[in-house]
Length: 309
Image (cartoon, rainbow, N blue to C red; front, side, top):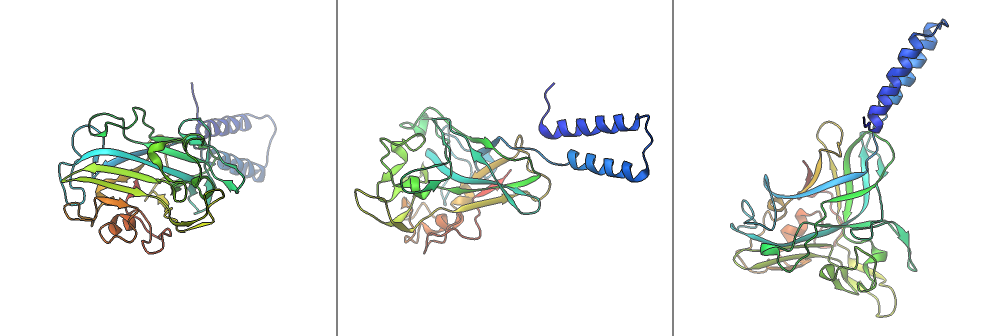
């Protein structure tokens, strides 16, 4: 029989309680209360998290490379997915008290790179989530998909998840041909100075539409590190459940394309080439919905594209 940490703790607590009640040695009331309190702490210490699952929907329907995307996307219907991938890093779990615990990404040499350091500084682990499978409208992509991140955490009573979209600064400005996975993806590389495409979403409606999010206004030279990026475009996504604990086996971090493109109009001009798009009025609704202040590229206080379902 398999037990998770919380189940095991409760089992041990009950066993200890039974054993204490059968003891031939008499205990006073104070000792009994102390023992019961200790058992209660053990039984309610929470669980550790090793996997966080992700999904992409349009409204209530899952999004895939097969068929058309349900509902209305940026004012259009009968849209077909072409590509959908994004990087996440600096992942944390949110406790019921509002404190945050690190979710430490493990290294798998394919989708995830663990935290570390290079000549420029220390960086948190980064993972690539990939929802295209190279078939149908997504032809030209990769056959493999990745819809979860793996890692370790301390035991706790968690109610939510927090993460940053994008690649950490000290990993962002590298040579993708020599970088470790998942930063060796040519499809997700933009340019040395501006770095990687943090988010790549493409679909076909009345025309091909592209939303590529990455850093802008970066300064540096061809032989040394980038000094800074005036428009970083790394939103922090903080999600908590309205009630109850975060259950990693059931709860899913969900990106809703309908919500992401709310207020944008793919039938007009300008939205079909949102390469970050901070200064493009047609793209600014998407930038805002994903949690970025368009004028500065800083993470905003609110976002509407992600939720826990």
